[in-house]
Length: 106
Image (cartoon, rainbow, N blue to C red; front, side, top):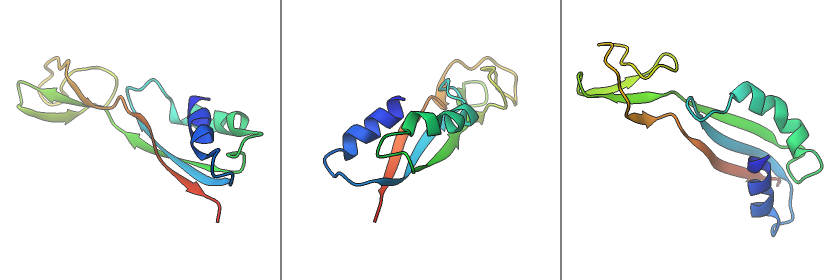
């Protein structure tokens, strides 16, 4: 709902419709892309986004491993380096929930 509200507010002055909305979703953002896609139709219904396509860019969780001295992509939700098995509390990427772009009609 907050994505729909943010985009609706941003395009209100333009008065046109929206073809597509692109968002970036991180693995640790708490948002499940499939659920977001499923809810999009209901959330956008009756707004300037009603016919808009939702494009989702998935961002995997990446941590900084002090032991390896490098960034490591996590295969799951555990904050443990997949290479050396050291606990890695520093998340580098994966919390994103960003609106990247809005394509207007026409």
